[in-house]
Amino acid sequence: MSLSEKPESTAIREIYNIFLSTEALLKGHFLLTSGRHSDQYFQCAKVLQYPEYTEKICARIANNFKSFDIDTVISPAIGGIIVGQEVARQLNKRSVFAEREDKKLMLRRGFTLEEGENVLICEDVVTTGGSVFEVIDIVKGFRANIAGVGFVVDRSNGKVNFGYPQFSTMKLDVVSYPADECKLCKEGLTLVKPGSRKIKV
Image (cartoon, rainbow, N blue to C red; front, side):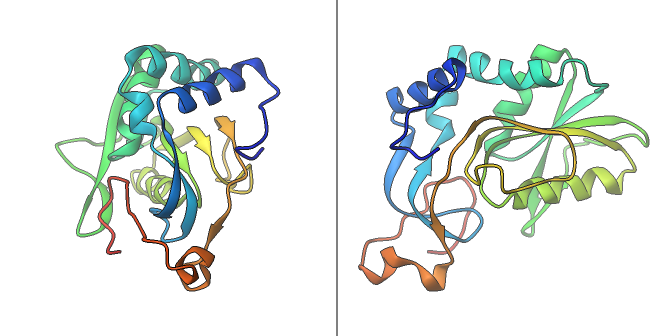
């Protein structure tokens, strides 16, 4: 589904309309966390600033995994924290997050995982899945079990496969370019980095 197409599912259409009404779908020339460039950006924070929207969207993730054996929900900072916290709240599970130190995601603040613990990974937006793959490595490093991966927006339209049960509330086919092949750069459009992660523009 592209942004010009109408979602078929009532639930997906409702989420799509929430993104539109909160002006969370941005148009321009954006540097994504993955390093790729795109003319569209999903600023989930503009949606997640409203508790009622956060609860409604995360309910789809929580409901998908409610029958799974889950002890803890883990998310990459900063984007995934609110999603992970709300999913954990609805599942009545513990919530932790990984954050960057020297450009590497790791557990800090006394957070830890136990060997054999069942962990659900939550994220806001997935393009290449880089941050989620980093969290997968963290969970494996503690010898904990990965129950699945839940996220709000799948910009890859299902192309990214994490190798575990995964669920997104909305799949979109959004065009992105390698930095050295970006058509928007060739047109001279100003590059903007709107997300939380610091990347040189």
